[in-house]
Length: 126
Length: 126
Image (cartoon, rainbow over the protein chains, first blue to last red):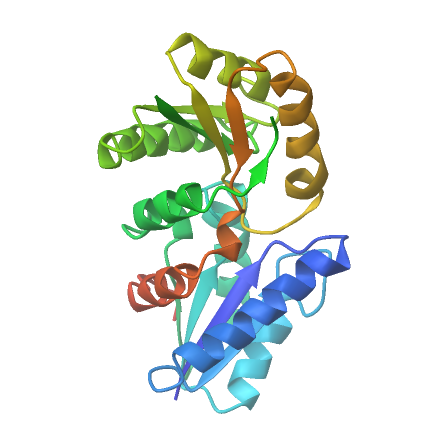
């Protein structure tokens, strides 16, 4: 069974973390035919952390896991921190295929999303 | 003339800021019929900052400006910092309509983008 582990940075602000959990739930409902498991984890500041997120996917029956960084830019977190954590955790699960997806800013769909958001411009300032 | 001001957080890592500038250029080419001006600015840590970004749009001939937060979550930066800066800057341009678009995580297209990124999962770890 294929799993997605949505990985966000994590925030001291609970509402921000809750948004990520809600998003994971929405994603779970949107792609359940393709990905039987969708869980969320955080790089820091919030639970669960990435190693426990991977463990949870395995316990749920995942045979392959896509770690999906919920990050816009290829900063240090995306380029170094997440790969390092995933790599050292993956060593514990030699029979599970674990891959890291590109960060979101790399997607061709980002242009469509930006334009749709601009068109939805809502809070008038002046 | 309508303008988009793409506002990212800004990073100490030049490559991350350059990604935002490249994205703004790509956006400029993608929506030029609808938005005659597309500029980028940063909340902190990189140039130009938001007030100068707005000024640049006005100097370029903007009559309305959509400030488009390049942020995934509704954290403090999106809820307080950007609105505060935009609001105080907007007071200098009473004839220009300035609005703030929703953050990207609020877009319905985010599901499509997440699934497309997961499908593109590339870096095999194990």
